Image (cartoon, rainbow, N blue to C red; front, side, top):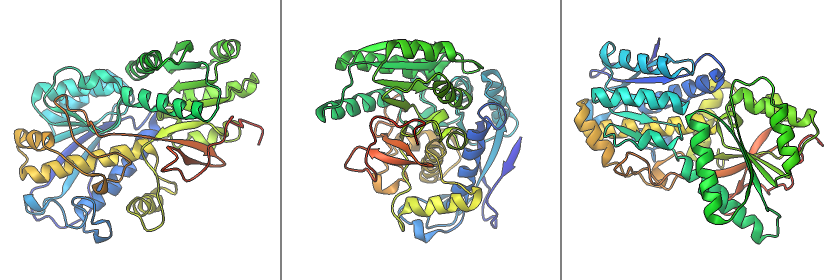
Length: 403
């Protein structure tokens, strides 16, 4: 268990938030990147940052409605194991006596952890997990700041419709998904949305994220020759697929990664030479120099040496929304925090993400969450869709390993 808080003088009892992520194991890089993002967020919340004054709580020190109380985070490592996530959540609630919870990256871990929060009546903010079933159980203590599987599916179909209007050939797509809650849920949503919009799915390939050989799956894709392949994958398997496609000389017109593995900090260094032009979804954009997002990215880069990624940024935004609700509640009473979360109505200019706002429906889902599409060009992603927000031109077909 790891505890950390931005250093500052204590003017009131701290607000304790328990967070569970994979800090070791296959997704450790993603967990560690989100840990760094939370440390930056704590600095912004707990200390005065007037240069970020559009963000709730940035201009003040701590939580004004709780006497300037600071937020302290207790971070635990579930290693990507749903059972461990369940056990650690119980410990955070019963032993560490946290006032709120957040996590847990893998949807399967968020699914078990949120059930514990619901049982004990502790507010839980899901920062990044996309599986539909997390907020589909009638829970009253679970809120999710991030877009979900159906949002991503609709984004892809709108993107394809735009490309068809430009004369691009998209006669069929393929869906390749890891077979836990995350991959299955997003894959199902894409298939359903594709059917509704008349986009044929040439093949659906579920697989285990722990696979060490995906040659058979790549050969299936090579046989079907879809115009777009959408990968719903974690880190090691995303990298493995890109390398295997190169080894088997299979290059579809376009690859789209459903964030996660494609956003992991280790992805670009591992495969940028063979995945040029691969696309990814992201609600995060660094923005222009002087913008709030640019300043936050500079803070993150000073800490880590790299740019903020989408998954970590979504977690940071979700922590900001949770802290704002606790401040509005003016209390650490769970019911009051839950009620404040339910009344959240943050506007786009109060956010660091490309959402239309943060506002939760009766299931706890942020109905104003949205996403962009970005493309790997050189050693970094560029925002290419929608065109109204793009800072680079879409490259189609993908270059892959020709550069």
